[in-house]
Length: 365
Image 1 (cartoon, rainbow, N blue to C red):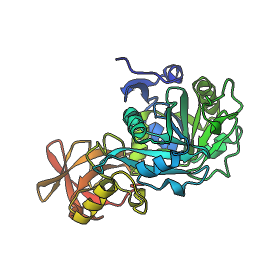
Image 2: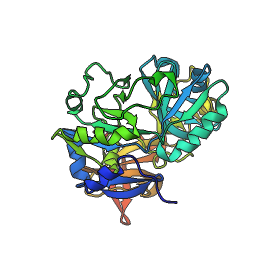
Image 3: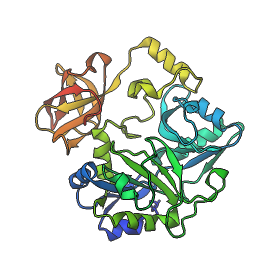
Image 4: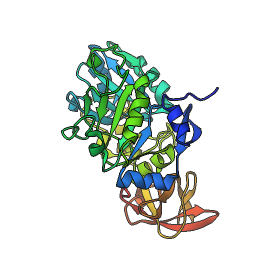
């Protein structure tokens, strides 16, 4: 099956992007170079096409109850306009996906990962009683503007200085043909959703528009000389520097929220699917946890590399790279809790030779 293309495919090709298949989509991995693009986001601003992510709208009288039962975090803490990061678990406590859910007032917007969108959609519909779960993923585009200049870049279009982190606004933008599909009341008459969120650790916004409006918005943002297009390669190194997890890589359906963290993603004061399994795991206490490691010498850790303690394998790297900002190798791996404390000295096997690394607190940067 040929991969799908986002509404911004022609913009990527015209800019000379290297296109690769990713989670069923043909996406830009880089434009000029991963390190260069990475540093631009950290120092100025970059835009990412993240239209491959899912867009599920949950509405109806039972929408909030459905989210209470399916999210590890507590949706009741999200007043209108607020978003929360959460895990969705199966009955054994294993992570189906991680997601952000926004309270739009009379409905909720859930953003699952591209590779798990269909699984999440099926799961949510199976749990729904008095709620509707609508999939708008193929109708909407999302552009992430990230970096310390992001707010200034947006100012000619809309003043977002009052928009707080993890909050969302519905606003009109001066773009042609930019009316969002409106099958639910929260979006009637609005042509844009802007959330102050992102996957880079920098300040920035995720801007959701209809597919036909996406090219105009992309081109408009690039008129600012501080903005550069950025591919999935730098998106991956940026998120790893900040200790953010990648679905399918840092968790693959066999881990629980207690293993991945962060600790605040689980609120035990409400009932949710998988809670009993997590409580049992917590009582047992004997499970590996995700930890960060920094290389003490030259060497780039990669996914699948073995982690050693006194010559014995104790874990495997899930994500690893050379940090463009720290100029050191960094990695995530599941380690026994006895070896997961910051300062613990371990080795990572690179090209059949152990290289010293030290466990560190996340984020790396």
